[in-house]
Image (cartoon, rainbow, N blue to C red):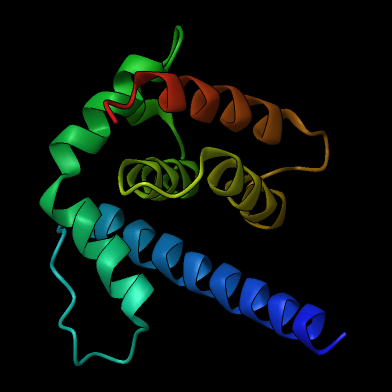
Length: 137
């Protein structure tokens, strides 16, 4: 009851944080400028850590993604898809449970990328499954 309600509130807040990360990475990619967030900025600790992880490790994150794409190039991905995949890849690299990361990423894809036909969800699900196998833990 109370614990269940708090768990749902925490889950919603974490999804909102992930959306903030996706938006920040989208913006950075559009401007071709990945800058570290300042801890005193108006972002949660989770957002700051995840965005900064991508900024510091962008080449490693992108290499894992490149190795996970089949017959596709990183620069062909839409900015939104690339931001979501980078975010999810970084979160897996940081040690978050793969199933949680993929599920949350796909929920964000449904909101921001999928055209209603499920193609984006299927594509990103496959990429993230490959990412999870290619990450050095």
